[in-house]
Length: 132
Image 1: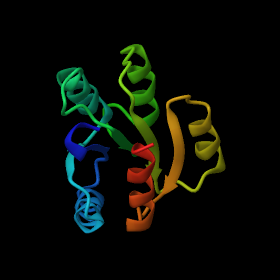
Image 2: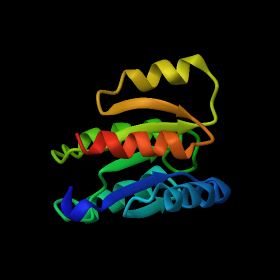
Image 3: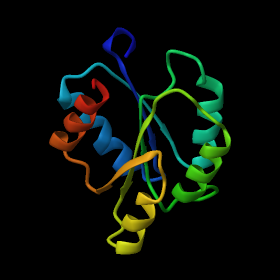
């Protein structure tokens, strides 16, 4: 990672969840540049704008249920972009449906499914995985 800064993109339309994640990020002690987008379409626009830049996300946390472009639609659109930069993606959802967890496994780019709320320990784990 460039200058040990982690670029985190959170795609979630829930302001409270974004606030909580920001607080958790601050407590990790990592140098994190966090950007949040309220839906998948805004996230796709952000990725297009930062492609090849040092601000391109290293880690993306994706909510499933959002307006405009939901988490699954975001993933479908992302795959069409043919991005070659390494990005670790995780579904971050309050969904308890087994089919959502299984569906997440069908996307090669998705490394896992995290149930909300995100914990500081889990986020630190994800940050450490980026260093490998």
